[in-house]
Image (cartoon, rainbow, N blue to C red; front, side, top):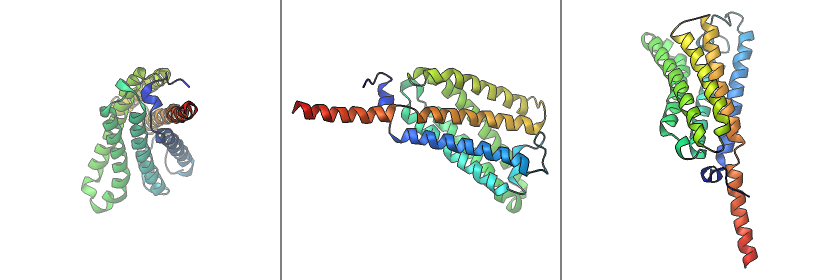
Length: 230
């Protein structure tokens, strides 16, 4: 079997494909639950209420847990990508940005669980800083990684989709956060959906990466060849 896709991909750890599948499933689950909440929370307007308002009240704990699980899946996906990508496609900066975004997301969830009751004076500033960190780091990481995908033989065909989806997410986020266009809830939720969609697509692509299988096949073939020679 040829290893022409890339030597780095061919030697990628077996766990990376599983990590991609887990991250994709977590992202899909998050989006599905957010959609369900739009119907369960009849007290909130889906176009005007930002997702952070759903962290409180009925089903708030479930969404906070979903935030934390998504944060873990982001770190898992980012780590797996850096293990599977080859050469210039790999970036410690991207890994750090994704981890910072995950930390910001988890801080929003955990902070909104305790700070409003125990430290109300800093609850809002912490939420705002954590949310902005999550959005900014995630979108920059997405754009950088999308550009770097071009340097990997396996990921090159995925690069255009990732690149343009990343830019659409950036434009929507910019219109929401900076230009403050349109309903606040619709703008924020649209940006979140696009960012998570990028993560899901990357996870699915990673789950289908042939690296682990090629590496296993090359080891098996090597063993069999030695046996025949003897």
